[in-house]
Image 1 (tube, each protein chain N blue to C red):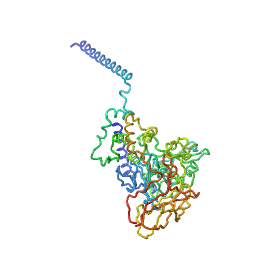
Image 2: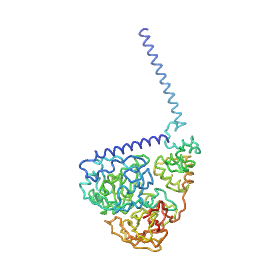
Image 3: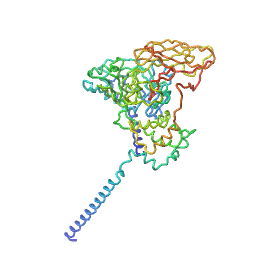
Image 4: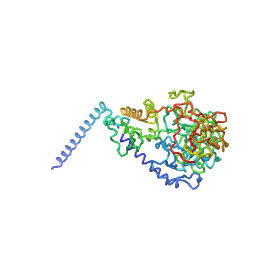
Length: 164
Length: 412
Protein backbone atom coordinates (compact mmCIF):
# COMPACT_ATOMS: atom_id res chain seq x y z
CA UNK A 1 0.00 0.00 0.00
CA UNK A 2 1.30 3.37 -0.88
CA UNK A 3 1.49 6.19 1.62
CA UNK A 4 -1.45 8.00 -0.02
CA UNK A 5 -3.54 4.84 0.04
CA UNK A 6 -2.83 4.42 3.77
CA UNK A 7 -3.88 7.97 4.52
CA UNK A 8 -7.01 7.52 2.38
CA UNK A 9 -7.83 4.28 4.26
CA UNK A 10 -7.39 5.97 7.61
CA UNK A 11 -9.49 8.95 6.61
CA UNK A 12 -12.25 6.59 5.45
CA UNK A 13 -12.16 4.73 8.80
CA UNK A 14 -12.32 8.02 10.66
CA UNK A 15 -15.27 9.15 8.58
CA UNK A 16 -17.13 5.86 9.20
CA UNK A 17 -16.51 6.15 12.96
CA UNK A 18 -17.77 9.70 12.99
CA UNK A 19 -20.93 8.77 11.06
CA UNK A 20 -21.63 5.80 13.38
CA UNK A 21 -21.10 7.95 16.45
CA UNK A 22 -23.28 10.74 15.09
CA UNK A 23 -26.12 8.38 14.21
CA UNK A 24 -25.93 6.77 17.65
CA UNK A 25 -26.06 10.23 19.17
CA UNK A 26 -29.12 11.12 17.10
CA UNK A 27 -30.90 7.86 17.99
CA UNK A 28 -30.16 8.38 21.68
CA UNK A 29 -31.41 11.95 21.50
CA UNK A 30 -34.61 10.83 19.82
CA UNK A 31 -35.21 8.08 22.41
CA UNK A 32 -34.44 10.52 25.22
CA UNK A 33 -36.85 13.13 23.83
CA UNK A 34 -39.63 10.58 23.29
CA UNK A 35 -39.13 9.17 26.79
CA UNK A 36 -39.05 12.60 28.36
CA UNK A 37 -42.14 13.74 26.48
CA UNK A 38 -44.34 10.67 26.72
CA UNK A 39 -42.96 8.57 29.63
CA UNK A 40 -41.42 11.08 32.02
CA UNK A 41 -41.35 8.68 35.02
CA UNK A 42 -39.89 5.70 33.10
CA UNK A 43 -36.34 5.97 34.45
CA UNK A 44 -37.03 7.72 37.74
CA UNK A 45 -36.33 5.63 40.84
CA UNK A 46 -39.54 4.25 42.31
CA UNK A 47 -39.10 6.28 45.44
CA UNK A 48 -42.48 7.38 46.78
CA UNK A 49 -44.35 4.87 44.71
CA UNK A 50 -42.63 1.78 46.05
CA UNK A 51 -45.65 0.28 47.76
CA UNK A 52 -47.95 1.22 44.91
CA UNK A 53 -45.73 -0.79 42.58
CA UNK A 54 -45.67 -3.62 45.11
CA UNK A 55 -49.44 -3.98 45.22
CA UNK A 56 -49.70 -4.06 41.46
CA UNK A 57 -47.66 -7.24 41.34
CA UNK A 58 -48.63 -8.94 44.60
CA UNK A 59 -52.15 -10.13 45.22
CA UNK A 60 -52.95 -8.97 48.76
CA UNK A 61 -54.89 -12.19 49.37
CA UNK A 62 -51.71 -14.22 48.91
CA UNK A 63 -49.73 -12.07 51.28
CA UNK A 64 -49.87 -14.41 54.26
CA UNK A 65 -48.25 -17.09 52.10
CA UNK A 66 -44.95 -15.29 52.69
CA UNK A 67 -44.95 -16.02 56.43
CA UNK A 68 -43.03 -18.98 57.71
CA UNK A 69 -45.62 -21.46 59.08
CA UNK A 70 -43.15 -22.46 61.85
CA UNK A 71 -43.41 -18.91 63.13
CA UNK A 72 -47.19 -18.98 63.57
CA UNK A 73 -48.62 -20.09 66.92
CA UNK A 74 -52.31 -19.92 67.82
CA UNK A 75 -52.90 -17.45 65.00
CA UNK A 76 -50.08 -15.16 66.13
CA UNK A 77 -46.98 -14.46 64.07
CA UNK A 78 -44.47 -15.06 66.88
CA UNK A 79 -41.54 -12.85 65.71
CA UNK A 80 -43.78 -9.78 65.61
CA UNK A 81 -46.71 -10.70 67.86
CA UNK A 82 -49.19 -9.71 65.13
CA UNK A 83 -52.46 -11.54 64.55
CA UNK A 84 -52.22 -13.56 61.33
CA UNK A 85 -54.92 -12.36 58.95
CA UNK A 86 -55.20 -10.98 55.42
CA UNK A 87 -52.70 -8.18 55.02
CA UNK A 88 -50.47 -9.06 57.97
CA UNK A 89 -47.47 -9.35 55.67
CA UNK A 90 -48.10 -5.88 54.28
CA UNK A 91 -48.34 -4.53 57.82
CA UNK A 92 -45.06 -6.19 58.76
CA UNK A 93 -43.28 -4.77 55.75
CA UNK A 94 -44.86 -1.32 55.75
CA UNK A 95 -45.12 -0.45 59.44
CA UNK A 96 -42.02 -2.44 60.38
CA UNK A 97 -39.91 -0.44 57.94
CA UNK A 98 -39.59 2.41 60.44
CA UNK A 99 -40.69 1.27 63.91
CA UNK A 100 -41.13 -1.96 65.81
CA UNK A 101 -44.46 -3.74 65.48
CA UNK A 102 -44.94 -3.46 69.24
CA UNK A 103 -46.32 -0.05 68.37
CA UNK A 104 -49.06 -1.78 66.37
CA UNK A 105 -49.88 -4.59 68.79
CA UNK A 106 -50.16 -2.33 71.85
CA UNK A 107 -52.52 0.14 70.19
CA UNK A 108 -56.22 -0.08 69.45
CA UNK A 109 -58.36 2.11 67.20
CA UNK A 110 -61.24 1.98 64.75
CA UNK A 111 -60.66 2.41 61.01
CA UNK A 112 -60.85 6.17 61.24
CA UNK A 113 -58.45 6.20 64.18
CA UNK A 114 -55.90 4.07 62.32
CA UNK A 115 -56.30 6.28 59.25
CA UNK A 116 -55.57 9.34 61.43
CA UNK A 117 -52.40 7.65 62.68
CA UNK A 118 -51.27 6.96 59.11
CA UNK A 119 -51.97 10.56 58.09
CA UNK A 120 -50.03 11.80 61.14
CA UNK A 121 -47.06 9.63 60.17
CA UNK A 122 -47.25 10.92 56.60
CA UNK A 123 -47.43 14.54 57.70
CA UNK A 124 -44.73 14.45 60.36
CA UNK A 125 -42.69 11.22 60.24
CA UNK A 126 -41.87 10.76 56.57
CA UNK A 127 -44.27 7.88 55.80
CA UNK A 128 -44.81 7.49 52.07
CA UNK A 129 -48.10 7.36 50.14
CA UNK A 130 -49.42 3.84 50.74
CA UNK A 131 -51.46 3.79 47.54
CA UNK A 132 -53.66 0.74 47.13
CA UNK A 133 -52.09 -1.03 50.12
CA UNK A 134 -53.65 1.48 52.51
CA UNK A 135 -57.06 -0.14 52.21
CA UNK A 136 -55.68 -3.61 52.98
CA UNK A 137 -53.70 -2.29 55.93
CA UNK A 138 -56.62 -0.30 57.36
CA UNK A 139 -58.97 -3.28 57.02
CA UNK A 140 -56.47 -5.50 58.81
CA UNK A 141 -55.85 -3.01 61.65
CA UNK A 142 -59.49 -2.02 62.19
CA UNK A 143 -60.53 -5.67 62.34
CA UNK A 144 -57.74 -7.05 64.50
CA UNK A 145 -56.83 -4.07 66.67
CA UNK A 146 -60.20 -2.51 67.37
CA UNK A 147 -60.92 -0.65 70.61
CA UNK A 148 -62.76 -2.37 73.45
CA UNK A 149 -65.01 -0.29 75.71
CA UNK A 150 -63.50 -0.71 79.14
CA UNK A 151 -65.33 2.03 81.02
CA UNK A 152 -63.60 4.43 83.39
CA UNK A 153 -61.62 1.75 85.27
CA UNK A 154 -61.03 -1.94 84.52
CA UNK A 155 -60.81 -4.81 86.96
CA UNK A 156 -57.34 -5.58 88.27
CA UNK A 157 -55.58 -8.52 86.71
CA UNK A 158 -53.16 -10.43 88.88
CA UNK A 159 -50.65 -12.49 86.94
CA UNK A 160 -49.36 -14.37 89.96
CA UNK A 161 -50.60 -14.71 93.54
CA UNK A 162 -47.88 -15.23 96.15
CA UNK A 163 -47.60 -15.63 99.92
CA UNK A 164 -46.32 -12.45 101.54
CA UNK B 1 -39.53 -1.44 49.02
CA UNK B 2 -36.48 -3.61 48.54
CA UNK B 3 -34.26 -0.62 48.00
CA UNK B 4 -35.62 0.94 51.12
CA UNK B 5 -35.18 -2.26 53.14
CA UNK B 6 -31.64 -2.77 51.95
CA UNK B 7 -30.52 0.73 52.76
CA UNK B 8 -32.24 0.43 56.10
CA UNK B 9 -30.44 -2.82 56.84
CA UNK B 10 -27.15 -1.22 55.94
CA UNK B 11 -28.03 1.63 58.23
CA UNK B 12 -28.84 -0.73 61.09
CA UNK B 13 -25.68 -2.79 60.75
CA UNK B 14 -23.69 0.41 60.56
CA UNK B 15 -25.17 1.66 63.79
CA UNK B 16 -24.62 -1.73 65.42
CA UNK B 17 -20.99 -1.45 64.39
CA UNK B 18 -20.89 2.06 65.75
CA UNK B 19 -22.33 0.79 69.02
CA UNK B 20 -19.54 -1.79 69.23
CA UNK B 21 -16.94 0.82 68.42
CA UNK B 22 -18.40 3.05 71.09
CA UNK B 23 -18.32 0.26 73.64
CA UNK B 24 -14.68 -0.53 72.93
CA UNK B 25 -13.69 3.01 72.08
CA UNK B 26 -15.17 5.17 74.81
CA UNK B 27 -12.43 4.23 77.26
CA UNK B 28 -9.83 5.46 74.82
CA UNK B 29 -11.65 8.63 73.88
CA UNK B 30 -12.45 9.30 77.51
CA UNK B 31 -9.54 11.40 78.72
CA UNK B 32 -7.61 11.00 81.95
CA UNK B 33 -8.56 14.46 83.09
CA UNK B 34 -12.27 13.68 83.02
CA UNK B 35 -14.29 13.19 86.17
CA UNK B 36 -14.90 9.57 87.09
CA UNK B 37 -18.65 10.24 86.99
CA UNK B 38 -18.43 10.61 83.25
CA UNK B 39 -17.05 7.16 82.69
CA UNK B 40 -19.69 5.12 80.91
CA UNK B 41 -21.15 2.14 82.68
CA UNK B 42 -22.10 -1.21 81.20
CA UNK B 43 -19.09 -1.42 78.89
CA UNK B 44 -19.50 -5.16 78.48
CA UNK B 45 -23.09 -4.87 77.32
CA UNK B 46 -23.99 -7.12 74.43
CA UNK B 47 -25.49 -5.63 71.33
CA UNK B 48 -28.48 -7.94 71.37
CA UNK B 49 -31.34 -6.39 69.38
CA UNK B 50 -33.86 -8.00 71.73
CA UNK B 51 -32.31 -6.55 74.86
CA UNK B 52 -32.53 -2.99 76.06
CA UNK B 53 -28.90 -1.86 76.42
CA UNK B 54 -27.83 -1.18 80.00
CA UNK B 55 -31.22 -2.05 81.48
CA UNK B 56 -32.64 -4.83 83.64
CA UNK B 57 -34.64 -7.55 81.92
CA UNK B 58 -37.32 -6.98 84.54
CA UNK B 59 -38.47 -3.87 82.68
CA UNK B 60 -41.64 -4.15 80.60
CA UNK B 61 -40.70 -3.46 76.99
CA UNK B 62 -43.36 -1.46 75.15
CA UNK B 63 -41.42 -0.79 71.97
CA UNK B 64 -38.10 -1.95 70.57
CA UNK B 65 -37.74 0.69 67.89
CA UNK B 66 -37.61 3.22 69.30
CA UNK B 67 -36.85 1.76 72.72
CA UNK B 68 -39.59 2.36 75.26
CA UNK B 69 -39.75 0.44 78.51
CA UNK B 70 -41.34 0.90 81.90
CA UNK B 71 -40.64 -0.20 85.45
CA UNK B 72 -42.98 -2.60 87.26
CA UNK B 73 -44.20 -0.63 90.33
CA UNK B 74 -42.66 -2.96 92.94
CA UNK B 75 -39.18 -2.28 91.45
CA UNK B 76 -39.67 1.42 92.21
CA UNK B 77 -39.56 0.64 95.94
CA UNK B 78 -36.06 2.04 96.69
CA UNK B 79 -35.81 5.67 97.79
CA UNK B 80 -33.76 6.37 94.66
CA UNK B 81 -34.60 4.44 91.49
CA UNK B 82 -31.64 2.26 90.45
CA UNK B 83 -30.21 3.21 87.05
CA UNK B 84 -30.85 -0.19 85.48
CA UNK B 85 -34.60 -0.07 86.17
CA UNK B 86 -35.25 3.59 85.32
CA UNK B 87 -37.83 3.79 82.53
CA UNK B 88 -36.82 4.56 78.95
CA UNK B 89 -38.86 6.79 76.67
CA UNK B 90 -37.07 7.33 73.38
CA UNK B 91 -38.52 9.15 70.39
CA UNK B 92 -35.66 8.33 68.03
CA UNK B 93 -32.38 6.47 67.87
CA UNK B 94 -29.88 7.37 70.60
CA UNK B 95 -26.35 8.31 69.51
CA UNK B 96 -23.86 5.44 69.54
CA UNK B 97 -20.60 7.30 69.29
CA UNK B 98 -19.43 9.41 72.18
CA UNK B 99 -16.30 11.52 71.93
CA UNK B 100 -16.28 13.09 75.36
CA UNK B 101 -13.35 15.43 74.63
CA UNK B 102 -15.32 16.96 71.79
CA UNK B 103 -18.89 16.72 73.05
CA UNK B 104 -20.12 20.30 73.25
CA UNK B 105 -23.13 22.24 74.42
CA UNK B 106 -23.96 25.39 72.48
CA UNK B 107 -26.16 28.11 73.90
CA UNK B 108 -27.73 30.38 71.31
CA UNK B 109 -31.05 31.85 70.23
CA UNK B 110 -32.79 35.19 69.66
CA UNK B 111 -32.70 36.00 73.37
CA UNK B 112 -29.11 34.89 74.03
CA UNK B 113 -26.64 37.78 74.38
CA UNK B 114 -24.13 35.75 72.34
CA UNK B 115 -23.61 32.28 70.97
CA UNK B 116 -21.30 30.30 73.24
CA UNK B 117 -20.09 26.71 73.16
CA UNK B 118 -18.91 24.72 76.17
CA UNK B 119 -17.07 21.41 76.26
CA UNK B 120 -18.06 18.91 78.94
CA UNK B 121 -14.88 19.76 80.80
CA UNK B 122 -15.63 23.48 80.71
CA UNK B 123 -19.07 22.86 82.16
CA UNK B 124 -17.53 20.65 84.82
CA UNK B 125 -14.68 23.03 85.69
CA UNK B 126 -16.30 26.45 85.42
CA UNK B 127 -19.60 26.07 87.25
CA UNK B 128 -20.70 25.06 90.73
CA UNK B 129 -21.95 21.47 90.97
CA UNK B 130 -25.32 20.63 92.48
CA UNK B 131 -26.99 17.33 93.30
CA UNK B 132 -30.77 16.91 93.60
CA UNK B 133 -33.19 14.00 93.74
CA UNK B 134 -35.62 14.79 90.92
CA UNK B 135 -38.81 13.05 89.86
CA UNK B 136 -39.19 12.53 86.13
CA UNK B 137 -42.49 11.21 84.83
CA UNK B 138 -43.50 10.72 81.22
CA UNK B 139 -46.51 12.88 80.32
CA UNK B 140 -48.18 9.75 78.95
CA UNK B 141 -47.67 7.61 82.06
CA UNK B 142 -50.94 5.72 82.60
CA UNK B 143 -52.09 6.19 79.00
CA UNK B 144 -53.11 2.53 78.64
CA UNK B 145 -56.19 3.08 80.82
CA UNK B 146 -57.85 5.75 78.70
CA UNK B 147 -61.04 4.83 76.89
CA UNK B 148 -61.41 5.29 73.98
CA UNK B 149 -57.70 4.47 73.71
CA UNK B 150 -55.14 7.10 72.80
CA UNK B 151 -52.42 6.28 70.30
CA UNK B 152 -48.81 5.95 71.33
CA UNK B 153 -46.90 3.80 73.76
CA UNK B 154 -49.41 2.23 76.11
CA UNK B 155 -47.78 3.11 79.43
CA UNK B 156 -49.00 1.47 82.60
CA UNK B 157 -47.76 2.88 85.89
CA UNK B 158 -44.01 2.75 85.59
CA UNK B 159 -42.93 5.65 83.36
CA UNK B 160 -41.71 7.46 86.46
CA UNK B 161 -38.49 7.54 88.46
CA UNK B 162 -36.78 9.61 91.10
CA UNK B 163 -33.02 9.51 90.73
CA UNK B 164 -30.12 11.53 92.10
CA UNK B 165 -28.87 13.97 89.44
CA UNK B 166 -25.57 15.83 89.50
CA UNK B 167 -24.58 18.66 87.22
CA UNK B 168 -24.64 22.42 86.94
CA UNK B 169 -27.59 24.76 87.20
CA UNK B 170 -29.07 25.61 83.84
CA UNK B 171 -29.48 29.22 85.04
CA UNK B 172 -25.75 29.52 85.85
CA UNK B 173 -24.86 28.49 82.32
CA UNK B 174 -27.54 30.68 80.71
CA UNK B 175 -26.44 33.68 82.81
CA UNK B 176 -22.80 33.11 81.85
CA UNK B 177 -23.87 33.41 78.22
CA UNK B 178 -26.24 36.29 78.87
CA UNK B 179 -30.03 36.24 78.81
CA UNK B 180 -31.79 39.16 77.16
CA UNK B 181 -34.93 40.67 78.68
CA UNK B 182 -36.85 39.35 75.67
CA UNK B 183 -36.32 35.72 76.77
CA UNK B 184 -39.57 33.75 76.97
CA UNK B 185 -38.71 30.08 76.59
CA UNK B 186 -35.78 27.72 76.17
CA UNK B 187 -35.67 24.82 73.70
CA UNK B 188 -33.21 21.94 73.68
CA UNK B 189 -31.64 19.91 70.87
CA UNK B 190 -30.08 16.46 71.28
CA UNK B 191 -27.88 14.06 69.34
CA UNK B 192 -30.51 11.38 68.77
CA UNK B 193 -31.53 10.69 65.17
CA UNK B 194 -34.88 10.24 63.46
CA UNK B 195 -36.35 6.74 63.02
CA UNK B 196 -36.84 7.34 59.31
CA UNK B 197 -33.05 7.52 58.94
CA UNK B 198 -33.38 11.11 57.68
CA UNK B 199 -30.43 12.76 59.42
CA UNK B 200 -31.80 16.25 58.73
CA UNK B 201 -34.93 15.60 60.81
CA UNK B 202 -34.97 16.68 64.47
CA UNK B 203 -36.47 13.90 66.59
CA UNK B 204 -37.83 16.01 69.41
CA UNK B 205 -37.01 19.51 70.61
CA UNK B 206 -39.07 20.71 73.53
CA UNK B 207 -38.50 23.16 76.34
CA UNK B 208 -39.89 25.20 79.21
CA UNK B 209 -40.73 28.83 79.96
CA UNK B 210 -37.69 30.81 81.10
CA UNK B 211 -39.06 30.91 84.67
CA UNK B 212 -38.88 27.11 85.00
CA UNK B 213 -35.45 27.07 83.34
CA UNK B 214 -34.15 29.55 85.93
CA UNK B 215 -35.17 27.46 88.96
CA UNK B 216 -32.42 26.18 91.26
CA UNK B 217 -33.32 22.54 90.54
CA UNK B 218 -33.21 22.82 86.73
CA UNK B 219 -29.96 21.06 85.90
CA UNK B 220 -27.65 20.31 83.04
CA UNK B 221 -26.59 16.92 84.38
CA UNK B 222 -23.80 14.47 83.59
CA UNK B 223 -24.32 12.04 86.44
CA UNK B 224 -27.17 10.00 87.84
CA UNK B 225 -26.95 8.14 91.14
CA UNK B 226 -23.24 9.02 91.28
CA UNK B 227 -22.42 7.39 87.96
CA UNK B 228 -22.55 8.32 84.28
CA UNK B 229 -26.11 8.69 82.98
CA UNK B 230 -27.27 5.42 81.34
CA UNK B 231 -26.97 5.61 77.55
CA UNK B 232 -30.71 5.15 77.11
CA UNK B 233 -31.37 7.99 79.57
CA UNK B 234 -29.25 10.63 77.85
CA UNK B 235 -25.53 9.90 78.29
CA UNK B 236 -23.34 11.93 78.49
CA UNK B 237 -25.36 15.12 79.09
CA UNK B 238 -29.01 15.97 79.56
CA UNK B 239 -31.42 18.47 80.96
CA UNK B 240 -33.30 17.52 84.11
CA UNK B 241 -36.34 19.53 85.09
CA UNK B 242 -38.30 17.66 87.72
CA UNK B 243 -42.07 17.79 88.05
CA UNK B 244 -42.83 18.49 84.39
CA UNK B 245 -43.42 15.95 81.61
CA UNK B 246 -40.03 14.22 81.27
CA UNK B 247 -39.96 15.18 77.57
CA UNK B 248 -38.87 18.71 78.56
CA UNK B 249 -35.66 17.23 80.01
CA UNK B 250 -33.76 16.80 76.75
CA UNK B 251 -31.37 13.85 76.46
CA UNK B 252 -28.00 13.61 74.64
CA UNK B 253 -27.95 17.40 74.96
CA UNK B 254 -25.98 19.42 72.39
CA UNK B 255 -27.76 22.75 72.11
CA UNK B 256 -30.07 25.06 74.04
CA UNK B 257 -31.83 27.93 72.32
CA UNK B 258 -32.97 30.89 74.43
CA UNK B 259 -36.10 31.93 72.59
CA UNK B 260 -37.97 35.23 72.48
CA UNK B 261 -41.22 33.30 71.91
CA UNK B 262 -42.70 29.95 72.89
CA UNK B 263 -40.31 27.28 71.56
CA UNK B 264 -41.56 25.71 68.33
CA UNK B 265 -39.43 22.56 67.92
CA UNK B 266 -40.90 19.16 66.95
CA UNK B 267 -43.41 17.88 69.56
CA UNK B 268 -44.02 21.34 71.04
CA UNK B 269 -47.02 22.09 68.85
CA UNK B 270 -50.10 20.34 67.48
CA UNK B 271 -51.44 17.74 69.90
CA UNK B 272 -48.10 16.61 71.36
CA UNK B 273 -47.75 16.96 75.14
CA UNK B 274 -50.90 19.06 75.11
CA UNK B 275 -54.35 18.67 76.64
CA UNK B 276 -57.64 20.42 75.82
CA UNK B 277 -58.10 23.92 77.28
CA UNK B 278 -61.58 22.85 78.46
CA UNK B 279 -62.94 19.43 79.55
CA UNK B 280 -64.22 17.30 76.65
CA UNK B 281 -66.34 14.14 76.41
CA UNK B 282 -64.26 10.97 75.81
CA UNK B 283 -63.41 10.50 72.13
CA UNK B 284 -63.67 14.17 71.12
CA UNK B 285 -61.51 15.45 68.29
CA UNK B 286 -60.07 18.69 69.66
CA UNK B 287 -58.67 21.30 67.23
CA UNK B 288 -54.99 22.20 67.74
CA UNK B 289 -55.80 25.77 68.70
CA UNK B 290 -57.89 24.49 71.62
CA UNK B 291 -54.99 22.51 73.10
CA UNK B 292 -52.58 23.84 75.74
CA UNK B 293 -49.06 22.76 76.70
CA UNK B 294 -48.77 20.53 79.78
CA UNK B 295 -46.65 22.18 82.46
CA UNK B 296 -46.48 20.84 86.03
CA UNK B 297 -47.62 17.20 86.37
CA UNK B 298 -50.58 16.44 88.67
CA UNK B 299 -50.45 14.84 92.14
CA UNK B 300 -49.85 11.09 92.03
CA UNK B 301 -48.75 8.14 94.12
CA UNK B 302 -47.75 4.51 93.66
CA UNK B 303 -47.75 1.48 95.91
CA UNK B 304 -44.30 -0.08 95.67
CA UNK B 305 -44.74 -2.63 98.48
CA UNK B 306 -46.21 -5.16 98.54
CA UNK B 307 -46.24 -6.23 94.93
CA UNK B 308 -49.79 -6.80 93.67
CA UNK B 309 -51.04 -10.37 94.24
CA UNK B 310 -49.94 -10.78 97.87
CA UNK B 311 -51.70 -13.42 99.97
CA UNK B 312 -51.65 -12.40 103.61
CA UNK B 313 -51.62 -14.99 106.39
CA UNK B 314 -54.62 -15.04 108.75
CA UNK B 315 -54.46 -12.29 111.38
CA UNK B 316 -51.23 -10.81 110.07
CA UNK B 317 -50.74 -7.12 109.53
CA UNK B 318 -48.28 -5.82 106.95
CA UNK B 319 -46.60 -2.64 105.82
CA UNK B 320 -47.88 -0.85 102.72
CA UNK B 321 -45.60 1.80 101.28
CA UNK B 322 -44.79 3.78 98.18
CA UNK B 323 -43.92 7.22 96.87
CA UNK B 324 -45.98 10.31 96.12
CA UNK B 325 -45.20 13.41 94.07
CA UNK B 326 -47.08 16.45 92.81
CA UNK B 327 -45.27 18.14 89.93
CA UNK B 328 -43.93 21.51 91.09
CA UNK B 329 -45.76 21.16 94.41
CA UNK B 330 -45.30 19.21 97.63
CA UNK B 331 -47.49 16.33 98.69
CA UNK B 332 -49.44 17.21 101.83
CA UNK B 333 -50.91 13.80 102.71
CA UNK B 334 -51.39 10.24 101.50
CA UNK B 335 -54.31 7.97 102.42
CA UNK B 336 -54.96 4.32 101.64
CA UNK B 337 -58.24 2.43 101.43
CA UNK B 338 -58.74 -1.33 101.75
CA UNK B 339 -62.49 -1.20 101.05
CA UNK B 340 -62.74 0.27 97.53
CA UNK B 341 -62.68 3.88 98.70
CA UNK B 342 -65.36 3.67 101.42
CA UNK B 343 -62.94 4.49 104.23
CA UNK B 344 -59.41 5.85 104.21
CA UNK B 345 -56.51 5.63 106.63
CA UNK B 346 -53.81 8.28 106.87
CA UNK B 347 -50.23 7.28 106.09
CA UNK B 348 -46.93 8.44 107.51
CA UNK B 349 -45.40 10.81 104.94
CA UNK B 350 -41.77 11.94 104.72
CA UNK B 351 -40.79 15.38 103.48
CA UNK B 352 -38.99 15.37 100.13
CA UNK B 353 -35.19 15.13 100.17
CA UNK B 354 -35.26 18.40 98.23
CA UNK B 355 -37.84 20.30 96.18
CA UNK B 356 -39.19 18.17 93.23
CA UNK B 357 -38.13 14.83 94.80
CA UNK B 358 -40.83 12.26 95.46
CA UNK B 359 -41.91 11.58 99.03
CA UNK B 360 -41.91 8.20 100.80
CA UNK B 361 -45.16 7.20 102.48
CA UNK B 362 -46.00 4.11 104.51
CA UNK B 363 -48.63 2.63 106.80
CA UNK B 364 -49.46 -0.60 108.59
CA UNK B 365 -52.50 -2.42 107.21
CA UNK B 366 -54.65 -5.11 108.83
CA UNK B 367 -57.31 -6.82 106.74
CA UNK B 368 -60.57 -7.56 108.59
CA UNK B 369 -60.86 -11.21 107.52
CA UNK B 370 -60.91 -13.74 104.72
CA UNK B 371 -61.42 -12.38 101.21
CA UNK B 372 -60.27 -10.31 98.24
CA UNK B 373 -59.17 -6.74 98.83
CA UNK B 374 -57.75 -3.90 96.84
CA UNK B 375 -55.42 -1.38 98.37
CA UNK B 376 -55.88 2.04 96.85
CA UNK B 377 -53.47 4.89 97.48
CA UNK B 378 -54.48 8.51 97.17
CA UNK B 379 -52.24 11.55 97.58
CA UNK B 380 -53.17 15.20 98.14
CA UNK B 381 -50.98 18.10 97.03
CA UNK B 382 -50.28 21.23 99.08
CA UNK B 383 -53.21 22.99 97.41
CA UNK B 384 -55.66 20.29 98.52
CA UNK B 385 -56.03 18.59 95.13
CA UNK B 386 -56.33 14.79 95.30
CA UNK B 387 -56.00 11.94 92.85
CA UNK B 388 -59.28 10.78 91.29
CA UNK B 389 -60.38 7.17 91.94
CA UNK B 390 -61.54 6.67 88.37
CA UNK B 391 -59.83 8.01 85.24
CA UNK B 392 -59.35 11.78 85.16
CA UNK B 393 -60.55 13.88 82.21
CA UNK B 394 -60.17 12.13 78.87
CA UNK B 395 -57.82 13.87 76.44
CA UNK B 396 -56.95 12.99 72.84
CA UNK B 397 -53.37 11.84 73.46
CA UNK B 398 -53.94 10.16 76.80
CA UNK B 399 -51.82 12.31 79.09
CA UNK B 400 -51.93 12.99 82.84
CA UNK B 401 -53.64 9.85 84.13
CA UNK B 402 -53.16 10.25 87.86
CA UNK B 403 -55.98 7.93 88.98
CA UNK B 404 -55.30 6.08 92.26
CA UNK B 405 -52.93 3.15 92.01
CA UNK B 406 -54.64 -0.08 93.08
CA UNK B 407 -53.09 -3.39 94.06
CA UNK B 408 -54.89 -6.67 94.74
CA UNK B 409 -54.36 -8.65 97.96
CA UNK B 410 -56.09 -11.62 99.58
CA UNK B 411 -56.35 -12.75 103.13
CA UNK B 412 -56.10 -16.48 103.59
